[in-house]
Image (cartoon, rainbow, N blue to C red; front, side, top):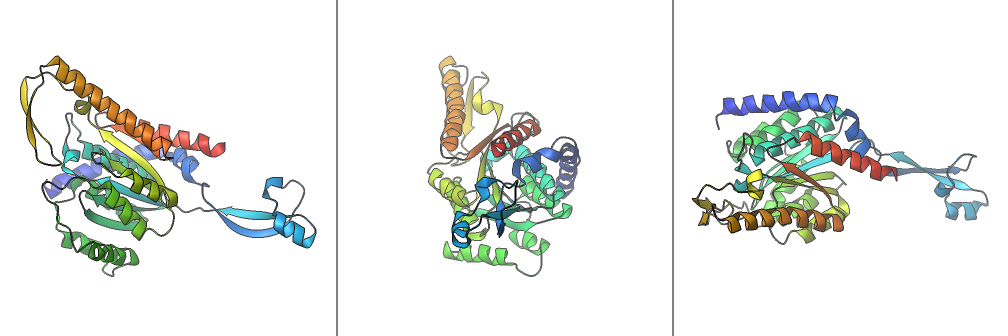
Length: 328
């Protein structure tokens, strides 16, 4: 992809998502996340009208009169976008690939975050951690996040390291230390598939404060749910599944050779076979249903995005669901 084309597509996403953030997501983002975290401030004497549930019974018993705990809302959030950039993300049967949909989703969240004075960071992963951008504020930073999701791989590792701050931050040092502990810089191999578990381990190693983490992937991986649950104990992890319609329903076009972009294995299939189409459709829909059911059972929120459809509608529905849950 040429640099001029990357710039053009980033601008298109910025214009489109910027309007959507202003018109649709302005209040939804705040309602879904703001006020969700609270910090202890002080203990003060009880006054009529205070919520009796906030009474500190230990202090009350010690001093002989009622005292209540006072909390303040944690106003600033850290938003972490964990984006899968495996080869399967480049698949798209319509005008937009799964990676394009992921970039638009990340843009919506990034621009919503900076509009509310929150920080947003990015981690790109596949079989290894491909790139890490520490959380920051500002529109320029948000645009860089979108560009990297959309076109990572066009620049060398040295170029993106130079594009940030010249002085390595704590986050960047942690990134290098983590790579050293894992045996140095891992190089992606043709048969090295997506490793979501490793991405979650990296999140825990670099993010010491609680963050809201959106894990954007097609989840073509195994043995990652334990790592996901571990990360969710410290962070607020939301799983975002991106699929293409042709992954759920294959058109009948005769014999075709399909190559697995995760392991490079090529197989021949007869798409005109009714049994093949039905089994493929059933397996694809069952994978989505099973993934959502298992994640929700483990307390992890779930968003499903169709790469050929709207990205905004699933996000708005998720925000409204979170708002209702916080009000309970």
